Image (cartoon, rainbow, N blue to C red; front, side):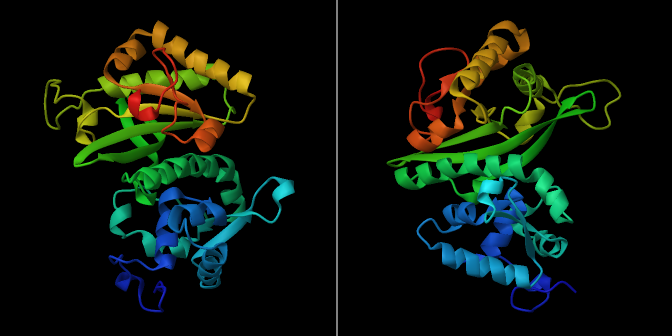
Length: 304
């Protein structure tokens, strides 16, 4: 039987209004797949100490719930990425926040190391939004950023967003709920392949659900309405190259909007923007660092 954090059976472990740190760590690693100690600290205890996180992580590792892999950068040999062991994954699979999420098994340090660069960059992209929300009194926390969300776009194909973000802007008594698909680009693919992601989002926008049991094709409306009241923004976060190369990649995204009819139709209905990750970290996501893909001066992501 899988052990709980207190030694009780796993079935007895459930979130409480004030969840213990170790349970929050397990939930964060189950949702975000992988994170460094520093990232977990900023995510879960931004005002806490690194020693607090380290003690909790080492306890979880001694009990077999988490493990770690060194980062590939030899200059940071003492920095590691944490991930769930199979026993840790079993412990968290029935948590309410994770229901409906596909399994994400990592069974070895080798398997973890293959996923490390991109996964940690996606977590890195999330953290400035969370810090900005705390600064402004908005609602956006660790569980409002869901990595690797898949949607059918027809013909047996799927679009997998690097993350889906839920964010609530609070202005006095007014609450403005925003959603965004987030694509994190580390400059590891060609600029053309990156721009093709916009075609996939345009296909998702136009893809219509087909009711089960119909003999004739009959539309039940856009399939994305199953999950979203309005089509989310599409945000590209770029890093991993010189500023000139990153700006060129943003220009290629804008060219796709201007030249492809399906993408142009999407841009008339949804907000599309791109920003450089280092600019988001330095000037905050709410700063004028987002380039609208339809053209125009940089602005906050909420004003695209």
